[in-house]
Image (tube, rainbow, N blue to C red; front, side, top):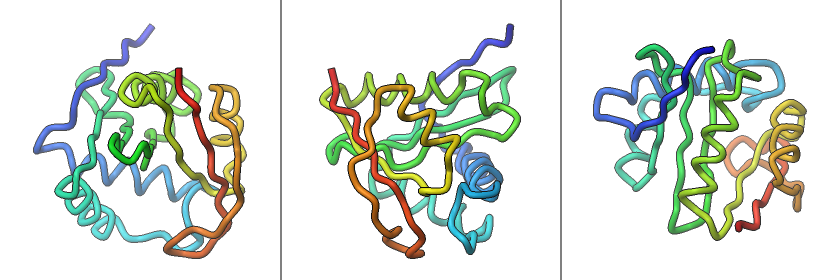
Length: 150
């Protein structure tokens, strides 16, 4: 059994975070219809970290395999992505449980409406869909979820 470790992101992690984000969001029905480039996401990671993202990475055997980005004050789970071969291996649950511990009063997130795997995961973990809308940047359909907290 492989052990997943969580730790706060370090200064040398943003490139790997962007790589995971880009690779996973490029899977069918996961990201926007027109994916930002890896360089654009790498720049976005820097901007969001500077603006206050609280990022925790999951690593297996010293390799980062996933991350969760939180905005605790706003009660937002901004991003949760895994390296594709880690999907279904329990890493996402560990990261989501971490988000629940950091924001115990509850939080919101959104995912691409067509991302049925993510939607099933969130619903299985106690989040509830509460709104359909358009992505604020690309305009593709997204579903908003809420975890009401403990």
